[in-house]
Image 1 (tube, helix red, strand yellow):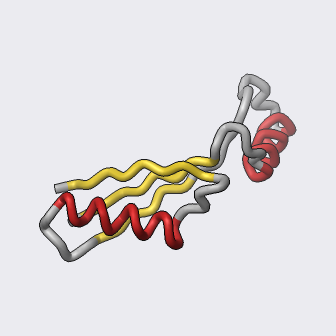
Image 2 (cartoon, one colour):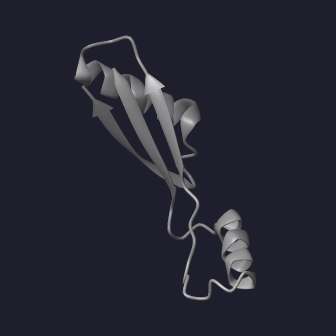
Image 3 (tube, one colour):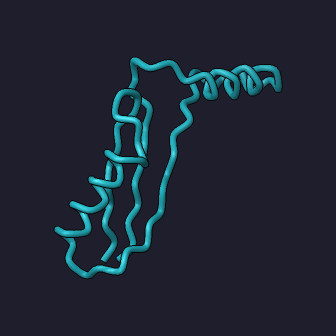
Amino acid sequence: MRVTVHVTRRPEIADPQGKAVSRALADLQYDKVRQVRIDRTIHLDIDNDDPEEVEYQVDSMCNAVLVNPVLEDYHVEIHK
C-alpha cells in the first residue's frame, strides 16, 4: 500500500529555510511573495493491505522517527 505523509512545521515555529528562500526571491525581484514555508513530503510503500493497520503503523513511525512532534504536525494519506 502506498502512503504519503505530509509534514508541516507548526505555525508558531520559525522556519529559517523558508526565510532564506523568501530573501533570495526578493533579491531576484520576486517582490509579490509574502511568505515562504518549507515543508516535507514522505512517500512509503508498505506491504500490507489493511488500511487501519497501515495507518496505525505509519502513525507509530511518525511519532518514533519521521516527525518531530514538538516542532511539526503531519497528515497521512493512504492510497489504495
